[in-house]
Amino acid sequence: MAKTRKHPALSRPLLLPMGLLACLAVPAQGITFSAGLENSQWYEAGSIFECSLTHRIPGYGNAVFYQRAGEPLSFYLDPVHNSMRPGRAALVIEAPQWRGGQSVTDLGYVDVKDQGHPIEVTTAHSENMLASLGQGMAPTFTRRARHSDEPVRVRLTNINFTPRYQQFRQCTQGLLPVNFHQVERTRLLYPLNQEGLSNSGKRALDQVALYIRADDRVKAVYVDGHTDSLGRRIHNRALSRERAQEVTAYLVSQGVPEEMISTRYHGERYPVAGKPGNHPENRRTTVRLERLGDDGQMTSAGANITD
Image 1 (cartoon, rainbow, N blue to C red):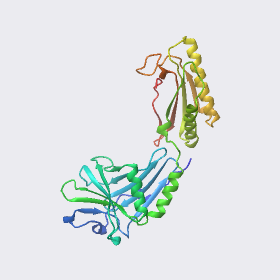
Image 2: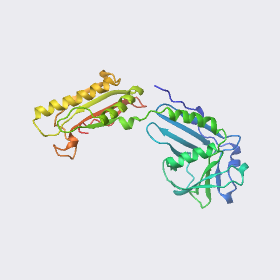
Image 3: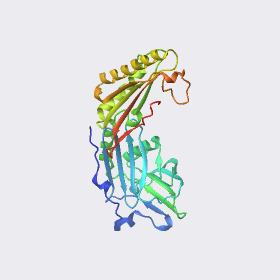
Image 4: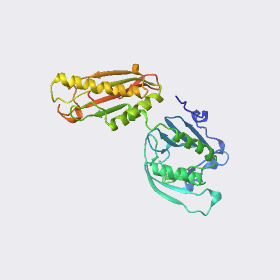
């Protein structure tokens, strides 16, 4: 399994140097948090599961571009202390001071939350911000301060950006097409009295198998076959067995170790919650994954056999 790269500087406490005053505008103009030529740093970390590009902003915290396997690009601010008032912040693309005279691009407003990451932006804005940094520009957020009406500005700078950005793009190109939460529980549906896998079902199982092969934390796979309540119970039990066994055989053919898989079949015994016994959604086979979490404990989507 690919190892996640982490920069040691990101795990150290944020220190406020004496030179911090150089990052702050005079009180009448509010406060601007921004790295300068001497302390602008970008850090890239990643694996086949996730990629991040982090900008350390002195006196404020981190600005993070993040992409998880199977999901689009995102961006968020991760401050040590949130100095912005909840509400709406303006997001603009500015030219650095040494390129004065260039126009400002207004990207509109973004929400400022009181807890967690105070600012998270859309994929489109995230892509625009990355592109502007690559062109030497400075994405900037402005919002009133939490305890006054003075503006608080948080600005990203492109100094030392390009080398880490190239590494970040290489990382995102190598991401898996899916993440664990997208494949930890898969449901395959069937026409009446059919047990064969559809093309869409095979594609779904291909994604499951691909993830299992890539993540050695996955330790167990549970395959459960079900039917609706139409027909005789003995027939339904046999049909659910055939469905489950075919799914297991397909996963094995795609490289999933057979000893990892527990294959079970239940006939009409466990209808989908809230559905009558003859409902089409009861004609299903489910695949559920369990894996070791970062704390060494098994995690899964839950063991409810009716799902």
